[in-house]
Image (cartoon, rainbow, N blue to C red; front, side, top):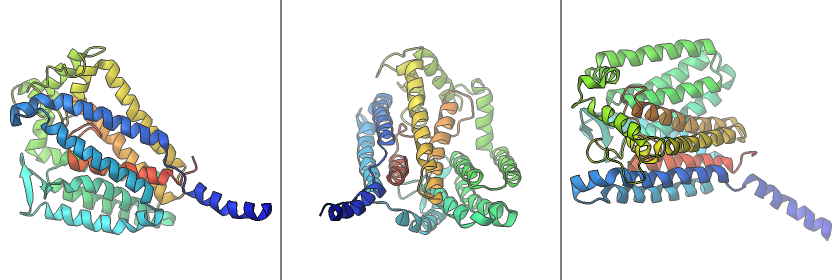
Length: 376
């Protein structure tokens, strides 16, 4: 009887091993960043919301709703997504992104400040970030045996990446173009594209971005203002100048939560791209470093999950998602501190925005789903 019961227990234990619980450290780090982000959105947006809408809770109310939806999406994805479903989703993700990126350029799309980025209330470029990760990971796995050749590796991968980047660039969304290009380049490098072809393609990509900036008056003006924001202190340079004031006035320990001065209509839209400057002002250098450390821990844990993933495709997907968070965070913090030109890239988990937050939480759910089958 005992031997029979042990034989029956083995399949059950095997099944439990294959469907382990999601990675707790990664989940805790995500929820910490989301929670701190919500506090900072409310603190940064209250004055702007009251001035524009007569309601200090206008932005935080929406952000709380999107955070709740995103959390449900993340947990549902972590529990229900399987490797088979993840692979099946590649083609629908490609077709959906391609269709919406084209439609947003038609009269169906809406524009703001000269850029046509919105389609029925959401930004297709946000979905494109995940789509390029899924499609590039699938393509690298499919071309595994020929990935180091020009015809079998660089050309198909580069063609896919340029298709996405070209459509996003037509929206005049340079920041998203740079981000998608960087994510794709990371996956190509990790996926095994020959470093010589990769270096050549990367150089052409950099030249292409510089060319877009050169011919775009809007982008060129941003570069000039970055080099010297005081050439237009009340215009394009105003936001950068006020951001530096906020960072400087925060000092070592900050002014305290809710006590920012720059959020009182000095920094335009302080709850969006420049929210990290409010973080620095209210939490100081120490608080800002602690938040950066949380991002570093999340990125480290993400790569740990990728290295222990059950298959190559899952590993590449996790690397792509983790790289997206890393690149986006670095670029945003560099913009806020004046190290690079203003790109309009949001800070993950912090910047207000429904589409970006829900998509990001969905991506975190994919990582958590893969972590359940990883050999951690």
